[in-house]
Image (cartoon, rainbow, N blue to C red; front, side):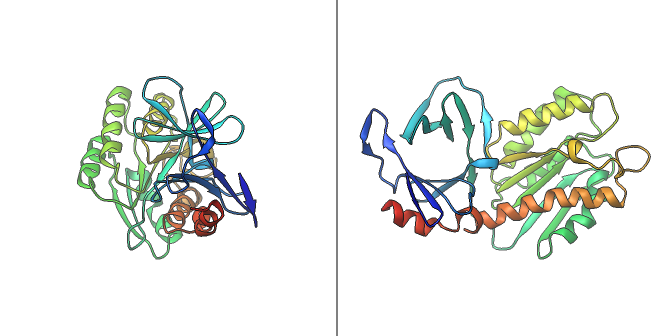
Length: 280
């Protein structure tokens, strides 16, 4: 590990050969100041974000290969195409950072709740093209068609706010999984949890967390947890002005953070200096 000017660089050793380093052109991790997000670079071109972008995964299965060992009990491993950090018995899947599109863009897929929030979301993302694919009463039946139409597009942010109008947890889970498969080329998919007094809402939220956890480029935005108590009209679902602003304030920073990193800023900004420090 090398530290200089607030930058921390981790050079890895080969598994089973602690005196032999993995070439930094193949594997290196760095953190930009001040105390930023760890960035893993694989083969000089693929970038992965750790820290708050990473997600815990269960240990088990086969095909786990240790690619490099750091200090202490820290290692980088690869499993089924995913790159993970391993510290002791804990595994976290790293977030793959692809290049952003030429112009900032986002697609918002949802129902009437997303329709409520759309004007505030557009105001919170000035300079972005925000395409809203949402209608009153929409479900993942419609969302799956929208996601299929987006298949193959890369470098955009996709917000998904669906599940409020669905009580069939099994069917929702299947369609949500299909949606995320079709959205696998997006730079970042953000799926919001449901805020509703309906009895099925907790089970839908559990399903959202499960399917998002299995997707390499998706994160959960826990709207149910952070929604302001006074942010709704009488039904406890649809948004008033306060709720619209709160939802936009939750989503817009995620999109901007991802775009900044994808363009080589934020946690990636010191990459050239970090690789020089590592000798790569």
